[in-house]
Image 1 (spheres, one colour):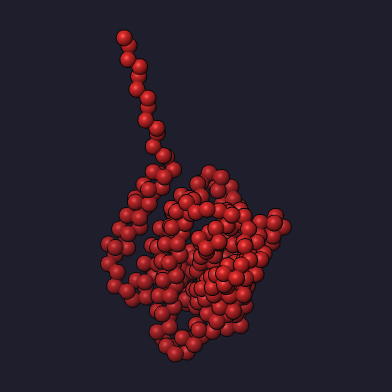
Image 2 (cartoon, helix red, strand yellow):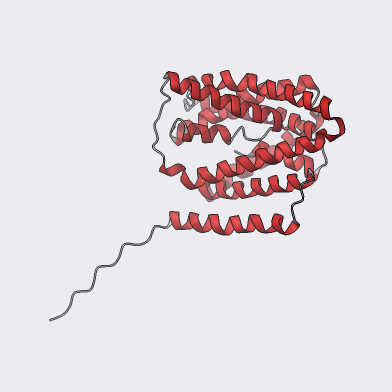
Length: 280
């Protein structure tokens, strides 16, 4: 979760990559890594293929449509396109960060079920979720590993085991659709994608060893703060007049408030001790 959401702003802000190239390259890289995870979960039978199919009906054409909209905006606005693109990525990061925060704080309160019920209402909801996530991903590359998971939890109440497998499998399908559209549009830097892929291998190895030592809900809170901070930083790069003090203070306040709330939820208050017997 969060790879695309973090990679795109890093490519834009730190390495100075053209925004549309950063999005296309990130999607091409992510499609490869997500495919490996999706195949593994499919073999483990943790994928709800019925739900994934209905989401794909909405997400795949929406992702391709998002790339078409990008090309139309680039032709219409010319030199201003980069700022518009950065603002769109920033908005997606802020929304994704908020979604991750809500998931970390409130997901445990939802009732869970193991399978997707293929009713007409649920099918329509899956297609709608796919259209929304697919379009956002095609335009900004952010949210494939987060927004789908939020929808699976909030809309369909899937249990965690089904959420992870279905999310990764569906994200692989969606990323390939968006990546191919960006490849056709000429937005992918293959040398950069290959470099990122090589560099990610030790990161995956390190992360797989550290995950047993880090609480997932705490990791989600930390990621949400980083995404919101990245979104504010990108808005500044796009021309928004956000004071530096706000950029510095907001992540700090979120850290204090959210982790204080998380610790309170994690450590419930001890039951009151029974009074000592009175000696007679």
